[in-house]
Length: 294
Ligand SMILES: Nc1nc2c(ncn2[C@@H]2O[C@H](COP(=O)(O)OP(=O)(O)OP(=O)(O)O)[C@@H](O)[C@H]2O)c(=O)[nH]1
Ligand SMILES: [Mg+2]
Image 1 (cartoon, rainbow, N blue to C red):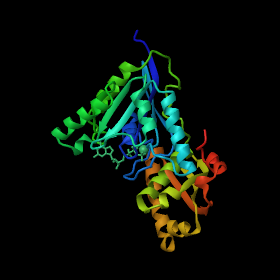
Image 2: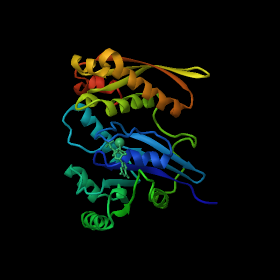
Image 3: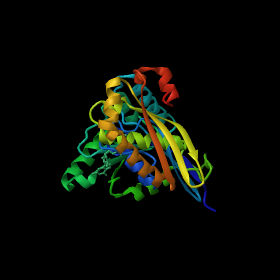
Image 4: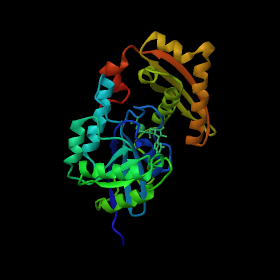
């Protein structure tokens, strides 16, 4: 009989390089939201891939930044935790990038005792010669890392990386039940889906000042009824979220509902409210309530 392999495979890297896109590609479900804006992911999200003789526990993490307020410090705590329990590190960079902007984290990768796969992402946007230069650049910076050029978006080389991960995982029994896909509850995915629509439709600081809290999640046999609050930091932001005669908020609700109906494979009814929660991003009690402080 084949031995069972299991372990933690943690994806880290700069903002916007494609970490969440890759995690979703591995899992085959949209567990993490994806947008073209930096700092889309705020949490550490597990995506579990199960097979008869393996369990790969992937972690998507926030992009590495220098924190300017407490929410961002909590986000970086999630990244730190991902360094601590990894069996394999997936360090993701995108074509054209030179190194992690945070030197402390970069040194950790350089000195890592566990296997590091450097995933050079978005190669669909690059030419062969540029790709070769990039590979050489990373080989010099991280001589111990294995370099894999990929396109998470186009699913290029993703399967090969997964096969390599399986070879590197230790022999171990599964950590989670074999039918489990993630560590996050249903409400979390509701919150994230709404936040994705806000990242897509509002400009500048607005998405970064928003947090979602789902107050009700009732599952009837044929419909899920949801009520969520969109929290902003200031009164002026509340008006912007709602928009002229409520039109902007309505669009968020409609688009979130469509995605959630796909996600839960069921009809969804969603009610959205907007509330001001002054400076929640810098308030540790509020952050804890929203699940940011471990
Ligand atoms: N062309 C191309 N675009 C990609 C690829 N992978 C991801 N993207 C795009 O890059 C953007 C960021 O992707 P995400 O997966 O949200 O990146 P992330 O690293 O999780 O970002 P943060 O959560 O903000 O740190 C999105 O617009 C993706 O569609 C790829 O292989 N090729
Ligand atoms: Mg992300």
